Amino acid sequence: MDSLKTNSAQAFANEQERSQHEHHVPTAGAMIGHITANLAVHALKIEPRVPVHCF
Image (cartoon, rainbow, N blue to C red; front, side, top):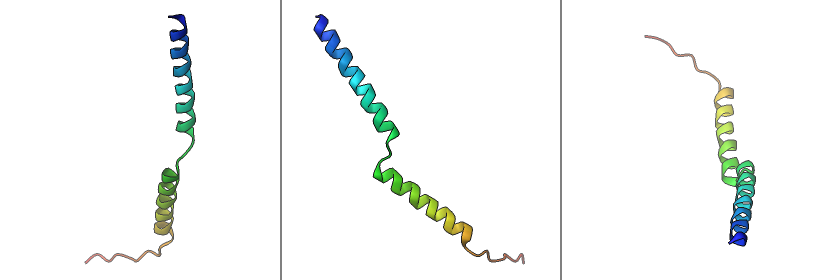
């Protein structure tokens, strides 16, 4: 029974390590989303402003 506890504890430790690694490594989809959002924000910042007239 002792080896089962050891194997379970080791499996849990391995899973925690893998989970932490994946949490800190960005995926391609996340990077594409961030880049696209940043480009949209910068496009709005550099777009010439048209004055709005109140009637």
